[in-house]
Amino acid sequence: MEPKKLFFVDDETLLLDSLEVFFSPLDEFTVVGKAESGEEALEKLRSVKPDLILIDLNMAGMGGINLISHIREMYPNIKLLVLTTYYDEKNITQAICNGADGYILKSAGRETIINSVRNTISGQSVLDSKVMSTLHSYVERAVQDKKYSENKKQEYQELLNGLTRREKEICYMVGDGKSNTEIAEALHLSEGTVKNYMSNIYSKMDLRDRTALAVIMTKIK
Image 1 (tube, one colour):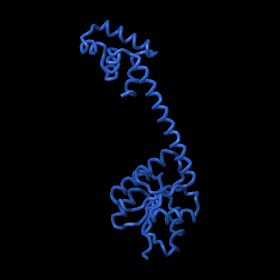
Image 2 (image 1 turned 120 degrees about the vertical axis):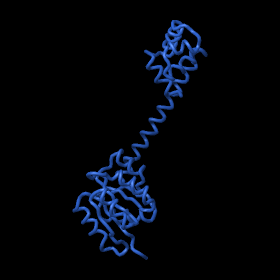
Image 3 (image 1 turned 90 degrees about the horizontal axis):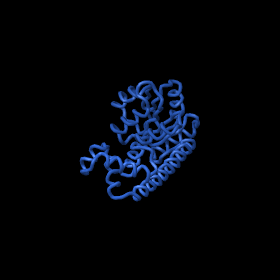
Image 4 (image 1 turned 180 degrees about the vertical axis):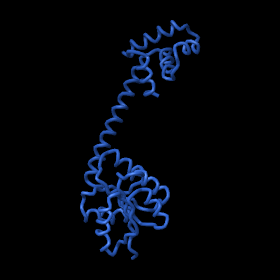
């Protein structure tokens, strides 16, 4: 079986050398290139096509997130495994959304890094336990935020249902950004009448002002 071709991208020369020391003795792998920046990596990838690239995220110039996006677009079959010290929500979600096949930490150790490369090449999605924990918290919060948003939308809809047909009509026009003058012209009413309707709407929906009503209407739509 042909050895799997590996390429490393990191702005720390010592780490690049260490990775080469990790993998070079293993017959199943061959290191075909190293780069200390995203720009250098893209240049070298014109002439070498690895099976997997280990990518750091925090680099001068083109960072790892942008590099992942470029490589995924240009070379969709190359496996991309993030190797970094960062496991915050922003970096994790951006890396995965841009096309990373896995995400592990530099602190994981030699054996874990080697096994993660093996698993990623075989088609598995590899995530460090700390990364999984961060993602879990992120998803949990997103779910709670969605539930909260849905509950608020239902609450707003119930408030709207308590209005008359004409009051609802005016509410939707406020949501579209129309002024009292524009509403009056569209509904063939005086501005004074529209103001009276607005006062009734604020009272029924327990709102302070027009801005609060406009915000609610954007969430109901």
